[in-house]
Length: 179
Image 1 (tube, one colour):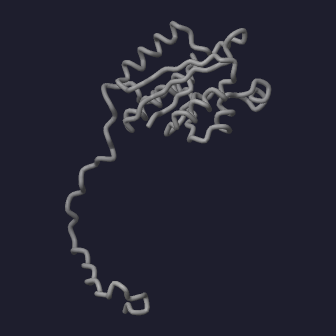
Image 2 (cartoon, rainbow, N blue to C red):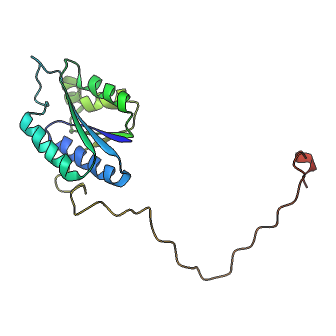
Image 3 (cartoon, rainbow, N blue to C red):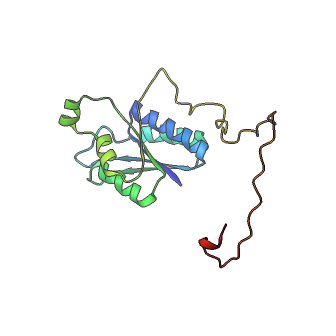
């Protein structure tokens, strides 16, 4: 499967990308990073520039994960573009960065993250930037697989009671014929 990441040139999006890389390492999934906005005369500051694309590609290459970057500027809203991509690739999870805004700020400015939470059918993971706490995506290698824990050592004490032997019942006998 694939993990879809909504990406802009922001600290929140970078935190979301780092978390998506961490999850992809554990689940062994690919990444699809999408940057979308209206484009044209309505060029938005969240559109990734060529220099930012090169930086992003360097991060994706260094991750060692199968990753793809797509950018859309076709005059549609960011929410509509990401929703269409999510419908196309059916990701296991959509990871987005989330900025802290007041209720009034969301009302006046709108919020792509709020729109994605409402519109997407797939699970959405919202990641906040927390500069004092690393996400765990940067390290010497993939995280340890905690699901492959060793078998427990023998437990001292009495052996568990054995199950009683099964009662033979003819195959076509109904529940009334069983003891």
